[in-house]
Image (cartoon, rainbow, N blue to C red; front, side, top):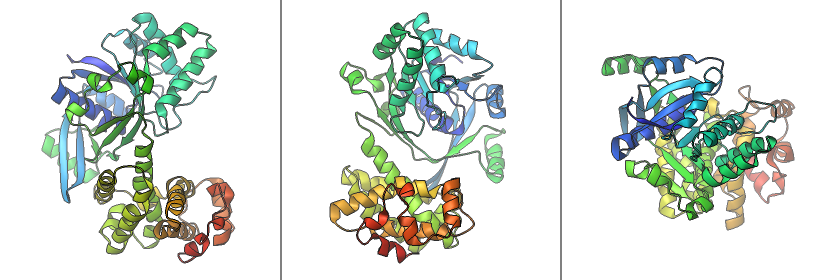
Length: 436
């Protein structure tokens, strides 16, 4: 591979290969980025079968983007030749550390799960690995690195930097800490693309015939993608221009650079995740299995439109055209027959999800208009009905509470669940009970 290694990626999974690595391929194709990705498998004592297969194929694989666009089904199969190789963190650490000597290296991306960015003094965490690599980088050539974490936590870049600096503080290495502050950039991000992973057997057979080869690391995702990158204001003010170094917009990537990503995070959580949580439990109780079935059903389609356009949208501080376009895209994504979004899979931990994804919208709507958003409020009634069935999968304390067959009032008064007594909201309890 004659491309320069510009990206060190922690995480070999389907999402990053269908999101970040897909973007690197686009930049190579359209913006002369000429970049290669070296991947680190952060977990395990040896390379997993997918990682081994990727190495055996010289990093070559295919992405398959399939879904619905403009009301029509689409399927796009593309080659990806960005991956140089995969290394195992435990077995290949010396080679990973030697990567820090490369002048071409500029970016570190990651998706180490929500629990990956944490500080634990005596544990070999991802931030500790980063701290060790930055120490090696400073000693090797002193060129700073740009971090673009993709973990699904708020302020992921800020949190990663905080954890890294805590480990550096444990070493009493003030020079390294000062170098990290001055030379490195930690961006926070919001990522949005549904990645299904491997195709089903029937599709895999069809792709094998179509490609003329068997690609056991082909990854499937939806055509929709959205990337929000929050560049630290101090770095931007000092002249740091991420697009100049990482030409995403030039390559046609749907990316937004912003000093404050919170409105976009709120949009995703309330529109996409909130609509899921407010609908799937009632959908299961009505006998449906997949999300796309709900979108096709006239009753549920009308419900989706009610909560998206009339109840959620007014609570989000973004331009109307922006919100309408995103809401329409959510419906189109929900209608994707290839996503195989099982309602019961989405129902996992619905109590905590409802608190985070639905309740804030209800409270903001009530504060703004002096009335309750009926569809979202009634979704709690659906939750109560669902939690009386044997299909519930939640934390032990939630499961134990519902074993006692609590009344609707008992559920709404459960401050441990909601952070407040919901019956104190005027009219709330009566509206919920109409759907119990």
